[in-house]
Image (tube, rainbow, N blue to C red):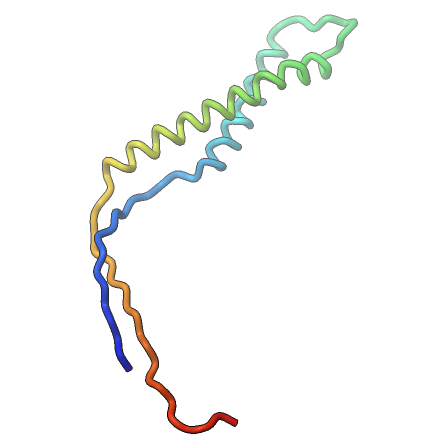
Length: 102
């Protein structure tokens, strides 16, 4: 069996999961929208639910954007702490089989 080994330099770091940061940011945006909606008097002709729903259209995307920005900053800081290493890639070629297969 013939084996070939190739070495390659690699960078090892911990990267944040962008989706998790964005979901948490959206949740925090919804909570902030709820608190801000409750802190002001509600117009009786509109109602609290409709007012909260309308302001959620702005609060949740703002929270998602802030979460994505925090993930980008965390990713940038993880690049500074990246370590380098060597990865070895082994390629094995099987020996030729002589004879017949049944």
